[in-house]
Length: 512
Ligand SMILES: Nc1nc2c(ncn2[C@@H]2O[C@H](COP(=O)(O)OP(=O)(O)OP(=O)(O)O)[C@@H](O)[C@H]2O)c(=O)[nH]1
Ligand SMILES: [Ca+2]
Image (cartoon, rainbow, N blue to C red; front, side, top):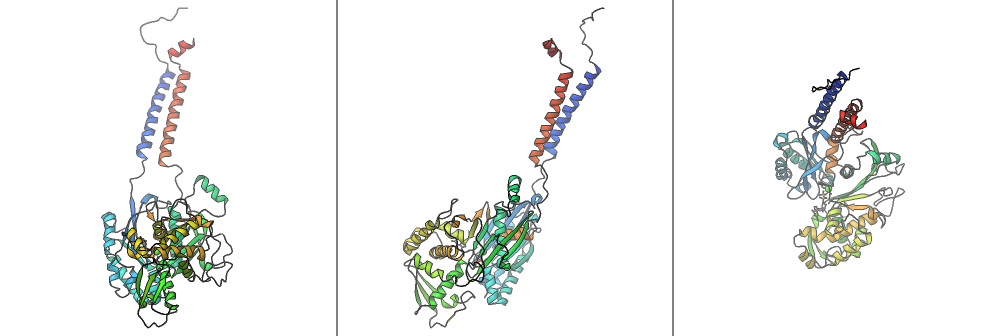
């Protein structure tokens, strides 16, 4: 048989080889197209930001907060953040009881500031809410008509702003406690449960949340998840279902136990138990003096109960700077004599056993921060007490010199406030040296202030769903990664197949 002739022309390619080559070429093209489409076409939508405004009309002052969040992630937890805070000049709106028309006007400057932060084309769709707290609760008990007029005045101003007005009202102490608790747990990411944490939590009866301690000027709130059942005091219990999980939350708001009203209560009692019109006050620094109008001291329901007639119109307060004495005089504000339940905080109010960690904010934070007692690792209770003690013992002239940049009103009251915080937590709620370490004094979480306003807005805009929203199984990044991986595997398989069935000549030679 003749051997095939070796000529100079290329050997002809077989049909199967041709088809395989074409297939290989096409699949490479397909893989490139897949990757390109995955990377370019499946980009997340351009950022579409939404805004919301909440005014916290507190007893001491009003704060306006602007929040923002990505529109497409509205129902996710932890996506809303504070982008602006504006402190309204002057007193809280309850301070306008004799000048009700001007209550609204006081908000104008901060509303203008909010207009500068939010793009003008979104002003009309931006909701604005005002919630008034203990100062207005007291005014409404004292003079309902004046409180209504103040609210009408602020409503008029808010309606005239370019935003979408959603209401101006007095919120209850229970709401204030609950929304503060929602805010901190939302910001701490405690409602977010995925992977292992979700599995671990489902094995336990309750989720790990943090309790909330809020100290305002006129009221104070304590809120935490309690397992105690059945509850002895249903009015202190709230049930929430958030992101697919049930929460049983204890809350109580003590009206008149904010730090300003607590001081008023203490001074009113001290005055009633003295002869003349001057008192030596252990909660103020030695050398400090303050004159108080007796009519102002007894003007609201926190102090008006035991009011006597006095033959003088002013009270002179002189500082003594004695922490132990100060603690003893504050202790009288907490009535621990009777408790109709198995356990109480004070004044016969039910308190179940304290549970979990606590975030303490507002004046709890302002005061502890000033005294350098806020830290990631909480200070021991005796360390805190001795820091307040040594601060109270400093003479006023020295304190004033050392902190000349701080407003005198705040500076003069840090001694009282430090002692009051310790009394409220230790005597009132009965924190001890063990669970004291579970209190975290915090002003902000990320960029957002701790307080009730964020929780209030999340609730009113339906941004906290009862059930966990159905999330896409893969994030954009994971999706792109998976597409790239699949394409690479596809190409590799085809190349391998081609190599196996149609070994190139060089390889064939190598084997022979
Ligand atoms: N040291 C200090 N004290 C502050 C500051 N801001 C407010 N305070 C005081 O801390 C106390 C509590 O303040 P807030 O939490 O704003 O109280 P509020 O919201 O006006 O009062 P409520 O209606 O009872 O909640 C008040 O006595 C304020 O005068 C601050 O920046 N520094
Ligand atoms: Ca407040």
